[in-house]
Length: 81
Length: 466
Image (cartoon, rainbow over all chains, first blue to last red):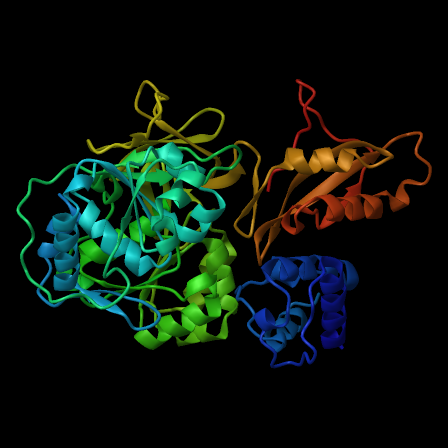
């Protein structure tokens, strides 16, 4: 469920910034190979904060950097309010 | 002291550098190349030299020949030079040493307004010729290393360092250094890159060059293959690196951050990904050199640093400006300019504002308000001017907001003009306008509509702090 929302937001951010998103994005996709760069992911977090109502990175106690989409999904799931 | 004298102290056969293709240079090779170059080009002795090459291997081989031989040297990236040759003219270079055939044609240089004489580097990228151990016995010159500041607004300033002022913080315990293999992620032409180069060389450690064209994933895979165990980078680069899957294959024992404010999340993330590593945040500037290092893994620096920093005197002015004064004799000065780098007491303004919270100073940002978005600098004034072009905007204020991926992001507040109809669509219009007129990293990620924006006594917009 969160996965769908994240991928949808990725499409919005990509369209917004003129980036081309990779065709198949699944849990194992490496984030830096999706077509979004660091700035794209920074925008994604802001976008998702509006859509979901929270920013998991602001509340994470043990911060870590996601490498794959699955990592990112888990960050959003584990830190949901 | 010169690079060659430092190299001579290393055990025979010490490997110095290896690039992404596997090309290596060892101690004897570096000395042989330097000797050969000096014999071939006596005209360069005591002159000002620009090193304009593409690969870091060519740069470092040329450095060893030129330090102690040229009066002043400065490194340039070949592509950067082809786009903007002016800095070489500002350096006042007499000679331009290069491995690029195109630049060796005198007309080519004249066309770019550079009056330097081209000198072709040979053996700078291929294997080293027959190695000898004999360094030509000419008296060494105290070479000035010219380094550009990162330059937020106008053109960067050129700062002249000595090898001594650059290597102030370098540890040269060859026994410990022999077990360390450094990866280079910084640009070798800037202060931070030179630091890594000197630490590796003077510490007797191998330095591994990255893949060309800034391909981070490829560089990290190359680093893992060679087995680097020490790496220095900006917080921006570390954030990116932590997202690269191959970063898991790195077995790091030394991690250094510098060049930007290191926040708590990047420091903690590094500590948990690399539990065996010592994470050190270095505070340095091109003008002041290395200031101090913070080793407790927390953002900012302990207030005791004001009394205890070994290399510099640290002072915080009433307005929060951080000042540094190098303790030793080795100081930098501006190259080709009369302007003073230090105040009358010898302190250098860093441009960084700090605030004391309990027993720790935390960084608030740059005095000039510039925002660092993933390594790119944004001036709030430029974004505010762009926003004010939008019909219906009465006032605008641009500030920073934190981001895990880029450190900070640009955010804007706008006040609608009272005569403007429905203000609710204004943020969208502002965003669209900014997208059309600004580089992507300058476009606010959020535009908030507000009733009033605070102004200072002088009538300027007061910008929010981080």
